[in-house]
Image (cartoon, rainbow, N blue to C red; front, side, top):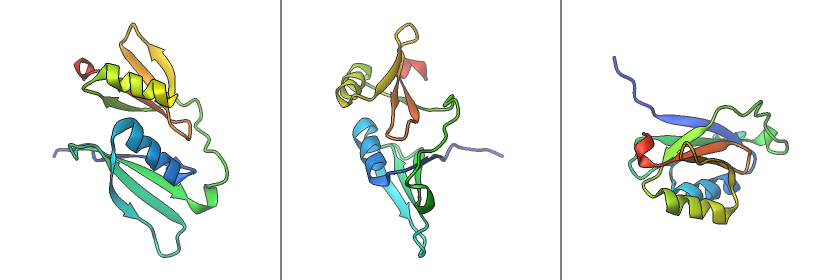
Length: 125
């Protein structure tokens, strides 16, 4: 029996703003959208260019007006970049870098809902 990572989910308040952020910051593209007839929620699956992994953004109609409780926010997504310097420059320009650890060679960005995404160079895989 084998398992392969398929997707991670995060809940977002402003779906359009979050989709735009992940497209701009990480080059993710929309792979699939699902919305039930009652429009009580909407799912947008974003994927990387290799199609190995997806990020599921979930918008809940009844929760869109208040922030999510992220607790201590110790969980995060981690993405590897093939050009660390260019990624850092882009994220610095976007103003979304929230923490850097130069001794480990990593940094974190914060998305519109406060989720952290770790950015690592290819030698950290």
